[in-house]
Image (cartoon, rainbow, N blue to C red; front, side, top):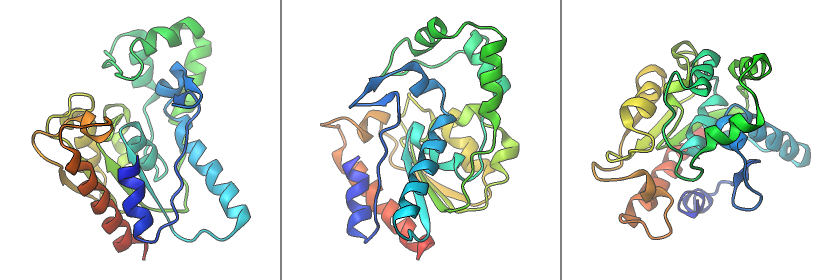
Length: 228
């Protein structure tokens, strides 16, 4: 994520990047790290609590790529729908393949039987994980847009900037980005390019290396405007 951290740091922001449990290159992958998405905003709030205990931290912006895009807006009040999540877990609604963790859903089912215990866990997924300290959000190729409630999207009261790739087949615009763009009152954004893929934001040698550098600069400009 250097392409995002670098421009923010150069703009004078203090930047903190998180290694979410079960979904990072240090500790490895667990299916919960990809499918228990509602745990991620709680990670961010925990880190903010720690930082606030050390020194004043000022206005806060959250930027996220892919699943991190959902994480960012969850901190502004967006909630997932437990009923839709249950449908995904049971196979009633197909789950797109996760490139980093093929078979994540099958791995989760081996750990948690499809019974009332799992349903109880999913009911907690619809809780409000908003953090009032978050003043602005920037999403890049966001995910989970098809799993969130339209009612919660309408409650977001902070500015939200969005960028996406026109050739993204991992988090397609119509399914994952458009719900955020259309139903968050303060959302605005644009495509990073008609041929830009999801992979162009994280591959070591992407086909369009200049795209993510440009989006990183646009994120810095966005936060300069809304966190000044």
